[in-house]
Image (cartoon, rainbow, N blue to C red; front, top):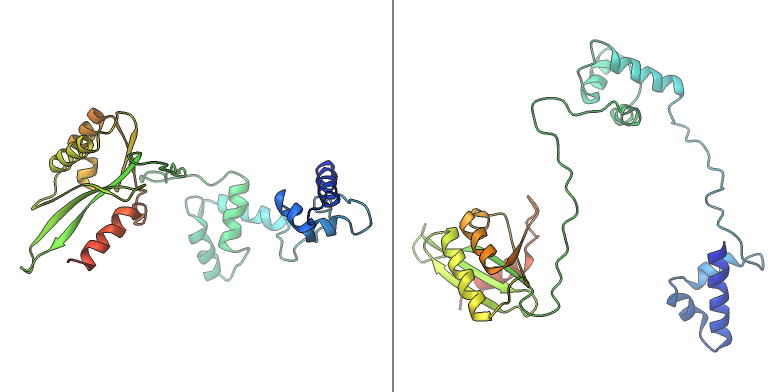
Length: 253
């Protein structure tokens, strides 16, 4: 309520000074329609959403139905089975208590869903760090791509390092095989040619074998470069190199 009154006063002062109400509202992140809704009764009203009465959904499970779900899941027959198997088994008997998602929701609420079995528990991956380049030689992106030849079944490997700020190709080579040793040599030559300072460059790549090789990691450590990798199974986490490879492949001349 206090914030609403303060914002309305600011907008009123701006309008008295000659500003347009719409532009004044936009400056503080509001719309003129929002301000009009606040002042419908002639004075600033408080937010009624937290105190509003919301009807109970007609399909909400009762306490008895929730208790029945817990009792069924704790029975000896179903104690070691997930809801994805319990619900169909009950349906084969002509019994229906709730949907599979409702079973999971109730069990989650009571902290009765845990990982079991010999497989590893699913890992929770945090949001990747965002890399921003404000000048050249801050973030490099590199990758290796196939290069077709006139001989069917034969191809070469294009190693390419690109500066994502200037889009400059700071290093590239073509080889007959794909190894971390060749990538490390190319990285060292690119760093020397660009005169990169230590601890000032991030090298981004995907999760290929040459990118994760010990030789490549040791060379990055020697050059003072920080590493950054794409997320597993995310093909568009290295867009600068991939888009440049497409240009090379579709415009061979």
